[in-house]
Image (tube, rainbow, N blue to C red; front, side, top):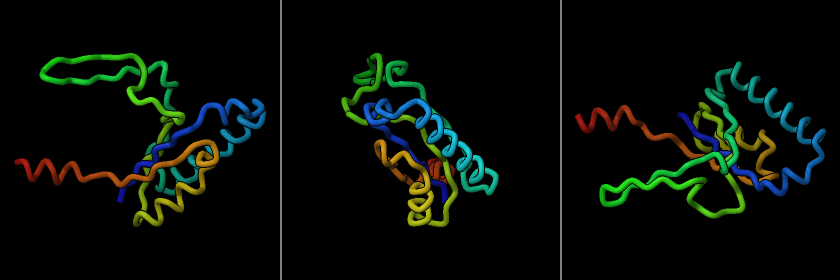
Length: 123
């Protein structure tokens, strides 16, 4: 099964880290992700740009509206993701726990849906 690990951070917690501590944390995280990718567990890993660089598209009654930044107001921001392969949700959670980011926000573990099955169902 494929799972998406959505990494949310609370910016104030990361900003409080000395730069050398952040660099050490990030270096270890990248090395760990590279190891899991070599094993075939991590399929894709990516960091996102800050929310101020985002735009949100909403279409209502055939009218498109684009706003700057994320739509939701929250203390935690979506900072990145890992697409992983795991036997089940329990294993996916164990993999998520190997990354340090839950100490600075949260990691949402969500199974991917089967888009190919949806294509077949819809003909």
